[in-house]
Image (cartoon, rainbow, N blue to C red; front, side):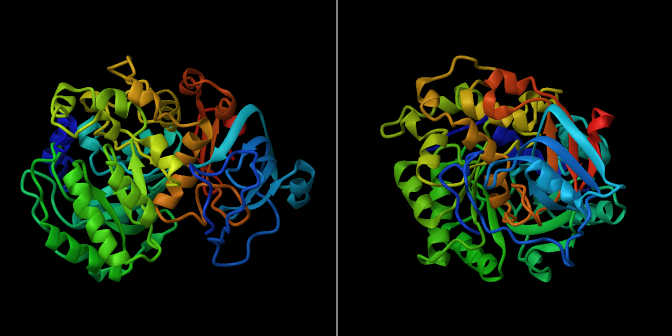
Length: 461
């Protein structure tokens, strides 16, 4: 199936020149707020957790952990040190603890963007500096972003930003194994000089490598099946997670073949991914389920906008190429896969323009629930059949997104020992319509217990 998408094609051609001269399994779709879902969180702390809270938030707190809703949460030393009933949590307070009553606002695990290029491709959306890109992300409520195409130059820039204390949020970088279009030139195994999960600090981490397999149309391929299989085997054997750019079903087949060879029926311990899982055949879905792969999808209008472009649907008229292959969010959830939502900034933005109402976690949640596009507001029946519940949509930017970056112990839910990463919104997405969710404001974005973004001072540590 040779599906075409003009924006993805442009991205493939331009992305290199855009940037600087650079546990326990959960139920399908993730845990349900209010349910008793108990993962096995580790602790990110290298020393015992503090016993006295620096900050306590009191109010409605969605944990994405069991039990799903708490009355209070205590933060200290960059971690959660207590969460649960208000009276119990207040036991870790003393005279210096700042207690914040959330009022009608609601706290969530810090939102995780599982596939984007906020910093590296900032120039494409008119942002001149890394600081502007970082501010754009935290002001929208993201506590973690991925940089899903990092060469040595971009890695050096991220390291310098981290060393200077300028990363206000957490960044997970995926090291590029080849250029996108127009050449697709292979960069070799340069990543092997680093350790898997290389982490200069708790704000910067390099968990995986990135293969760009095809162009935006699925008509050109930058890897042969044999070369891809060999490179995937080397990366997996060295302990690296694998991310991808796979638009066409041919590219999906090539990637799935490579994964089957290295997993050999065993568990997907590195959480290997299928990025841009826009169209997936029944056979491919079954193979993804068998290997417990992580589909990365773009929920903000992706179905209604991308696949309704003339250059996209116009090539779905060949026999055996049904629209039922497209945007199979619900099918993936029903198969038990953990669906990670991703902005893919700036490539998902119409005309690459970063507007105030785009690129937000609330857009991903609402888009998953109603399928409404920004350009095409008439939603096809096949899109309506693939909508997610609010719990599944919320998991896509918390629990499942943390799974997608292979850091579920520390992110994506709120439990003792997880990072004190919290996003406070002006409403409760679990009791709202998609339109109401889109109108919610970010009150504060808290990373490691400190406010990376603060719209209302009274609610910020």
